[in-house]
Length: 167
Image (cartoon, rainbow, N blue to C red; front, side, top):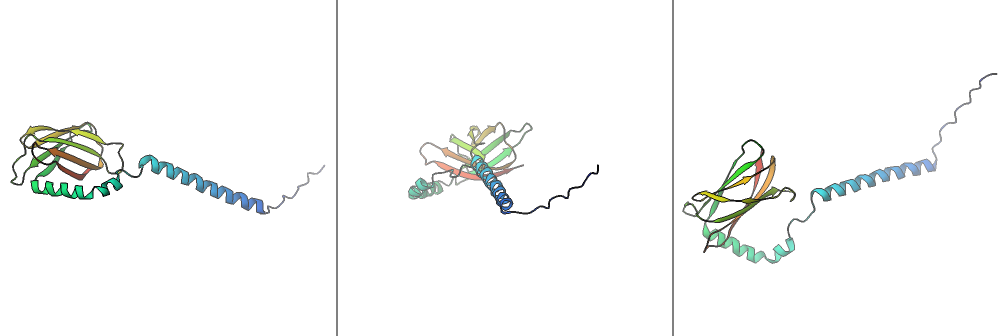
């Protein structure tokens, strides 16, 4: 009894093989695109502000900025980062004569520039004439958008917005 070696049938590329390869290629591309769309929508929903409504109110916005410029108020910020992941944000409000603004109602928010998931409302309290402090429980390094508004009786509302980079 001799073991006969049967020669292997050589591989032939047929139309069905090519069709299966193209199907697999487009299947992988479709899966990756679906993953990218899912991740994009999860991390940034798109429109963060109502641009159309803001456009309609553009003249009101210009008038509010003109009133704010007439006030001559300025806000300077300081940030202390004690250990533990938190921070203390200090805002100094002054008028055009560089005098502190006492008794203002100051409200603010801080959040990431790309999404609203980490937005935090800030509660400011006046610790010295014209000096307002807010405690932030947890804040990670990176870019943050800070916005605040101050209201003093008998004066138009002051608002400001800036970007902070934290290490």
